[in-house]
Length: 159
Length: 286
Image (cartoon, rainbow over all chains, first blue to last red):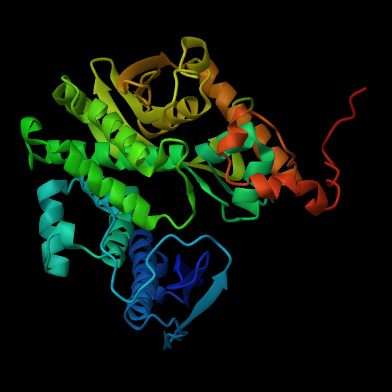
């Protein structure tokens, strides 16, 4: 049995009109024998692989935000092989164009609030989570932080 | 296997009104030449309404203390900041359009019965991605999913219903007959039945901010039963088939004035690709 988890995210290219860049991470792994027959363990294993992909992509995006110069990176260890791809295309861009991290948009904040209700976290729970994770309040989140949290809560709401 | 795996309700709506616009936007992913002010206003008002509703639901602000203009301004600024396409502000100009958008937001958030409206809301911004079921066979269509966002789900004494916030320049399209087969509404109603089979009713609510001389909020509640949902799903399936075949041609209508692909459309005949592939499953009709 082989498990393959992929996470892909597209963001604008700073300073270039109508361009976006995609960050893509795929991890392929052979699950340990003891979890192959256990559906629940397998589910958690797949989830952890997916989480790892997402974290690596987000980490890469953070670096791009800071350096404003996208670059390529490789991941991989042991039985797992990983690859990240960087690609440009001609899609419309819709984000920031400087090196300063952009604040989360009101649309993102609204969606986070909506998701907090859908996953049973509630408004107060969301505030606490943001403070715990990022050391700031909801209104001070950066775009990339809000985006990461949206992905997490959405995964939870769809689980 | 189909090249189109995930369709949104708005994609199907776009394809229904102009297959060529769908082709430019979703297949070629071409940047729009300009952005319609109606979209800018619609997006900013939508964000402002939802921000207001969240503030009230969270208890962060009481209804009498809700600062509508401040909420609106934040949404407006963010909308303009994120927009990189030239906006066609029309005769009113940017300031006039901002005034209109603010007035429409006020029609929503300063409504006398706002607390009751907010109390009916069970959840906001509900995303769905569901396998499409062929209403004729009752079977899932392999590899095709329908994606969308319900603005809100309302709870009424009868059960749950989707709510969609709209802004419109006139009441056209919001009469009883047009709404009885509303494509987006019927698909949202279908989605709600999939998400909450026990509680979903056949009702669909629209709250429409009308951009008239005197901007106002009007409500529409329409019943979209099995027949409307079946019609909408069949529209999705037929649109999907046409998309797969590469059907795309200009469909002139009153919507052309606000379209962001006018130049590209004008030169389509010189750029169009090869003739359509023959549909191997099509039956000859004499």
